Image 1: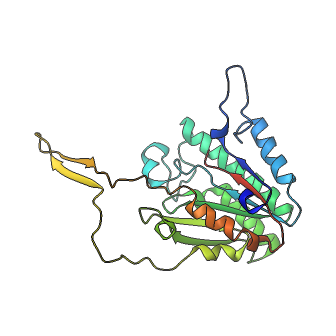
Image 2: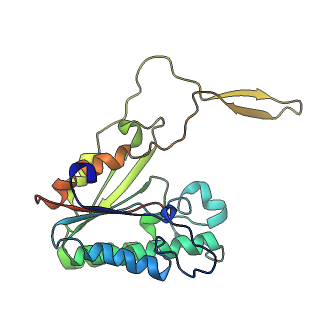
Image 3: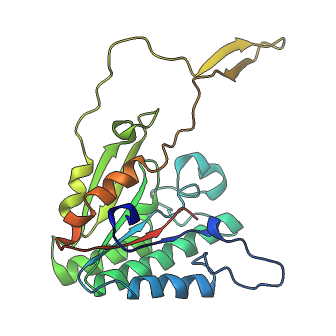
Amino acid sequence: MRNKSFKSGRFDKKYNQRHPGHRSNFMDINDPSGFLLACYFILRGCPDNFFAMFAVMCSSFTKMNAGTSKRSKCSSMGFDAFPSVSYSNKLLERSVLLIYLVTALGGTWFLEQPSQSVLEYYPTFRKMLLDLFNVQGGDAVFDTRWWMCQYGAPTPKRHYAYSNSDKIYLLNQGKLYVKCGQRSQTVSRKRNAEGKQCYTGTKHLRPTECPGCCSCQVWNFGLGFSGHAGVMGFYIGPI
């Protein structure tokens, strides 16, 4: 966004580590100073003319972590006796409060998750959607789904997003087709002396994430979200 001459602010826990003796991390919205700073960022946005992107930490909400979090579509709050589950629940609930604030100021918000995430079934998030529908009608919130490999990711990886702008439909590039040709082998398989199948990564093995590829596309039509000449970008990263 700054490269496009727009004012923007990035907000992510990785930008600051809590030092010994400090009770609060100003880059963690689960801490008092972090939540207040996030509110400050949003309040700095021009009314009816700013964009906020929420990338809530997905690791606790995905199916891969269900053994630890005990989350499912019917029990999306999980077993919050685990610190990681309790932390993620608090993070999402505070993000919902920030989304309320963005909406009240006339801004545009965007929240994305992997397709296996049960975040969209979380009671607080569902209540927020219902509140917005009750106040603004059926066009209050929109959702879409897309394939990350259509944005350069090395794996298909399905994602979904919610926003109060129908422009998020631009992320969906349609069906996914497998191109003909030789596929790269990411792992080699063999059995060890005990007969157990083992896997070894090859040089073609890459991380499942492609940093910034889809985010760039979101920012590219960020102007279309608000429909104004200038947008203040606000980003809450995966923390």
